[in-house]
Image (cartoon, rainbow over all chains, first blue to last red):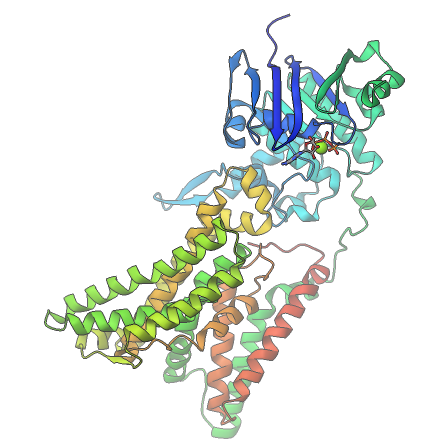
Length: 248
Length: 342
Ligand SMILES: Nc1ncnc2c1ncn2[C@@H]1O[C@H](COP(=O)(O)OP(=O)(O)OP(=O)(O)O)[C@@H](O)[C@H]1O
Ligand SMILES: [Mg+2]
């Protein structure tokens, strides 16, 4: 196999006296889906925030596409091709889909040939294309409405669409289905599979073993900030995963 | 997708109702004008709205509160509030007048330019301070700008030695009182600022970020927007608009007065709210604010016009503010969620 897309070794992160992560290692290959599991407080969110440039690390190394990286801000990580979708989605509810997909990276046209002006039309069309690519239908009239009028699954799709529009090579999702109804959970799982087929690597955090076994290639379990085990998904089962999570 | 499962899936409402809910402020302004027009015809046998003098007076009355309301609109869209605008305006006015007194030996045009420059430069300082307190030290907007309200009030009166500062400068007088094609110069100035602010808010990156911050600060941060810097700039912009209002005040009355903007603070917030902005942030438009300012000005001028005791103005404007917020809150229901915020 070629070199992994993301390779982490010896990662340690302390918050004051609390050691949230201790000597954690992880690899993800291109087009691979890695599930991140563990009890509450095990350090899953902290780990992805360290990857996404939200937290600085105390020790350890992160290599992305073979190069050591040290993202100072989330924007740096995004520029490198790592997009993160947090559980609260972080959409601007008062703006439409196009505005959200392009937030912070707006497109402009020239009015009368010289006055820069938001290019709403292009941003709308491009976002529509991404959502089509994800096979998400959103009623036409809702394309220009604030995203608060969308359903939970549609909003999740907008957040994912925003991530992949910018050609993310690694997509990180923190509990992407936690707030969704069953049909929408299934839709998001389908999305993950479709993205994987397009060669996007995905790390997703989940407490739902059913989802984990449905879409991931490998599972990594954290316990109290340490690696507690790692398995190919075909080589393990629910009982073993739970044992790794709680220890003993 | 399973939208039908969403418990609050908005239903389509009667299109007429939706139209009224969205356009009510336009309609209300129209009704107000018609009301005074009928009154004028029936009682005085004359016209209200077709009389250029009345129109000029209303536009003039609207211009200063509107200038304050323009910056206020952006601040409120971003989820803040600026209570200092009235006294920032007064401070700018006093600084302009004292500067012009001190430079009265110069050519009047030059003295005017120096005065304007001084007023505008000084005006952004309180905006920078309150913005910094709010954005970087996590002081609530209400408190940060209330602090600047006090500071500017005090510094304004100190600069003016506690009185008004008269200026005798023909250019200044022209700036405040001349008319171009029947339109008073302050109204033209205000219209220019309106156009610029409308463009900045609706078509510019700055405006888009302002809405985003008001909608979700977390989303703005994660999208890479420098939220603290943007916030400081918003309060500086608001203070700058107040500075322009201070210039207009000084020109209209050929004098600087620290308390000149005091009564306009509430009018400015009222104009923004009547114009459809939410005090929770995320929504509002410049067009709405302009309508709001005109609704207030028409009520104020119209009531005097029909000889109602002037104190009723306050009652009327107060009622309009409350009604506008009530309509705003039920608007989602009335329009089936179809309204845009920007
Ligand atoms: N910003 C922070 N400051 C201090 N301690 C923190 C911070 N963020 C996380 N921690 C601590 O680090 C540990 C790991 O937290 P983390 O949020 O990564 O857990 P998690 O695995 O995501 O849990 P959950 O499943 O509940 O989301 C916890 O003990 C938590 O209290
Ligand atoms: Mg977590």
